[in-house]
Length: 168
Image (cartoon, rainbow, N blue to C red; front, side, top):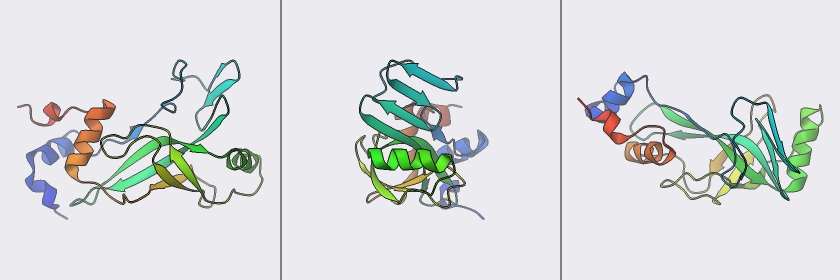
């Protein structure tokens, strides 16, 4: 099915490059240590970072997925980000990973900078679904995004420059 965005040469260039590029963050923005990269686990003193969990001082984080539909397209951007959660939620999630019950859905705080779309520390709703996949989040007051929002987010995150879609 054709999209209204098919009329935009930048959209056509993005599709020619393979389509919408998902974004992933290795660690929360506040993480002061080296990135995890290919390592399974990083420990710096009491601070710990794994692929899905992070402890930094007294703050606890879970990795979650945000899916944002792109207005005018059938595509959506998927962002693997970090959510700051209350201690009881973090430890309930750890217990779930060992076979315990799922934590309750909860409010959380965005721990990565998604400017210009939304600022770090924005409110999130964290959902655990049936527990078979990474938790998901929704942003307060943002259900989708424009193509220009997507391009601005790509540039801000270093994923793709606008010039890459307009070069001959």
